[in-house]
Length: 120
Image (cartoon, rainbow, N blue to C red):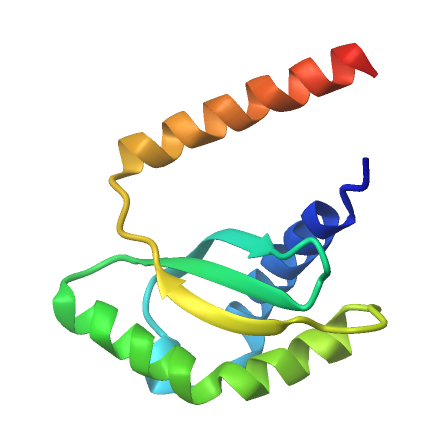
């Protein structure tokens, strides 16, 4: 079974963290924004990027505007930073899950990884 899309998702998540901190100058993307999850399709053509914003509704709205405006530029930066044959089309989605659910997801993911490594 191939897990390339999972590795690509992790690479994109790491690169986006750096891009948000160091390369973007958009005022709408200057708050406390973090990338919570990246899902890449198995064919590597599309990536759904989920972000969290610290703050109220105004900060969420600013982040949504900023990501919409900067989507193509961010994809260009990903292409420069990742050595991939093809950089997926990206779309940004707010992640409004309560943090407790996110922590449970992380626990389940670690348990799943442990189970996979034991069966390998």
